[in-house]
Image (cartoon, rainbow, N blue to C red; front, side):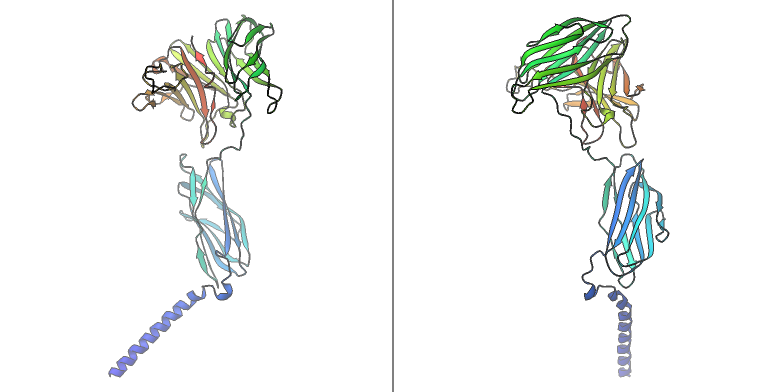
Length: 466
């Protein structure tokens, strides 16, 4: 009796072992044999190439077998990238694409040796304008004599454009900032010249301003070493030499007649000789074109040369400021309209600084004068920042507690006048109390890693005194 029970137990164990082996054998068969040990891993290339356009991301799929055997019931499953919604998918009839609310799946009954799938794609749409990076994690599996599965590494894609492949135009040794002020029938151009050469003086320097049509040249003022010449058709400032690092302010005043046609347009052109011709041309020139004053309204205008940043929407041509009645009026003209998009919005900033000093605070000499005894370092005290997307502006004021500009206002309705490539802002005086004299400048910013355009130059800053 005991023998029978023992025999039955052994037979049961053998039967169970046989069943287990029978179940496992197909799995073991899927493991590459010695003849297949040289097959690449994974046995395919999977290309998932994203592109971004019109607020949608398109993923184009390419699948390429790397082996000489068939893959059956191929399934390429791609979970929808987090932060997106499904739009559509497409593929050839032999590789239908489906979406189950979570995954986009491409299926093919049989991929032959070294076979491939091309031209399949799916489209998603970001659900938040704030998210710019999206990640996909595909999963591939197949059946057949060499069944298997493989999960490629996740791939991330940023819809933020890369920094522009852009080299700024070379700046001349002789740099000139230009500003214009309109008061009644008087039009005053202020030209701030600076020798930016690292070590050399410039010789036979000329800074010229043609007389605008409909105006008359009244007077010239110049700082040494320049001398002003009234050539009737042109205001000309000349210097026999201009030392490295030197600055000079040059002023030309024109009168406006009652019938002066607007806009009033002129230009600045300069010429000079380089005494050191080992690294420079003997004679050079530079042009700042289209200094435009479009009306008789009292204001100050700062001009900026075009082409010094890659984005036309933030390439400043002119910034204007005026006090009229109980408001401060600010406007900015760019090379092309500054229009916000779903991806990014140009930021326009107007800065105001009442310190009027260029030197640094000397901690070793506390009795030395400082730009501002409250702040002890150079920087703006007021900022008006324009948000074109929200059609609002905010005012930032100097905060002594953490020594920086702080947003001390709720978003204020912009009330902007956007015409073509010009944006204008009206700021009530109670929101931005300002009294001259002060320095001011404007900046534009487009996207991270893109250069900022500014009409401010630390060497020759603009000063508002009226």
